Image (cartoon, rainbow, N blue to C red; front, side):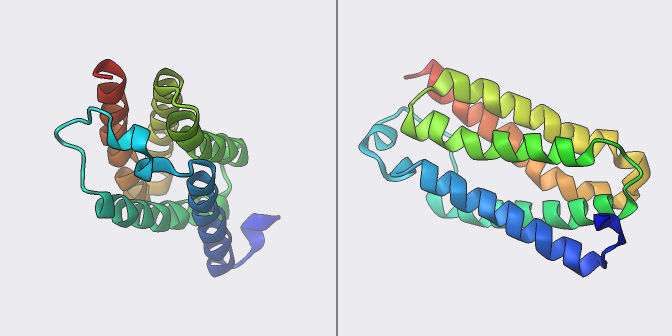
Length: 157
């Protein structure tokens, strides 16, 4: 069982998976935010500068990897891997839905589902994970902001 592995091995596993998700999502969105389509969208006034996305996602994935490694180490919760897999799919699939297929409505539904799921990681495991649950907050807060950015783009384009 994975929960019998040392913490550092679990952490490396989750770092690889989570940063792999970012890489896969970026690859699937090409050309993404650099596309003429995206550049011409009416964007929310609170849209962060481009460099901030890299900083945000790096921080999010490091924190979420630490959280997941600890959660799997405890493995007192059934379905953790299923929840993580659903999170992975929702996270990766938002990019092509929004940027490649230009389906902002479907992307909005996707990111709302992802936000609810990540919120569950925080609120649902808070008692069990205690202070470690706060490692999920950067992800959750970022998704709340990203959801508003997606909704704004859908409403004003």
